[in-house]
Image (cartoon, rainbow, N blue to C red; front, side):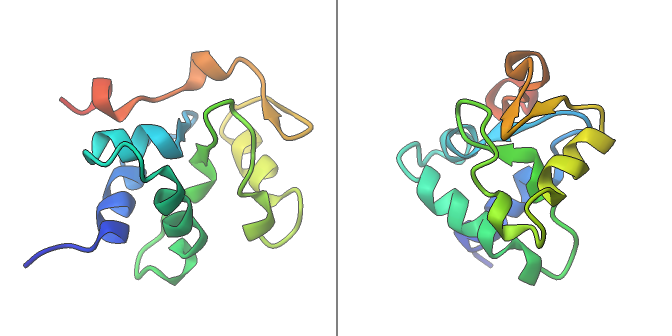
Length: 109
C-alpha cells in the first residue's frame, strides 16, 4: 500500500529526538522532494488530525523560527513545548539552532 506524503512526513517527524528540531526543508530533502518544504508545512498544520501524536513542535523553518506557532492553540504553546525539552527560545527564534538541529539525511542512514 502506498503511503500518502503526509504519512511519510509524520513518520520522519516521529523520529525527531526530544530536545532536537528539524526544518521543513530537511524533511522534504530526506523524502526526496527537496522543493516540497511548503507541503511539509501543510502536513504539520494537519498533524493534529493524525491517529497518533506527532511532535510537530519540533519542526521549524530553516532559520530556526517558530513559523508554525499559530497552529498550536495559544501563541506560546509551541515555544513552551520546546522549552520543556530543553530548547532555548527567545521571541520566536531558537537559540543555538545549529546545536539542536537534527538532519534526517545524516541521522537516518
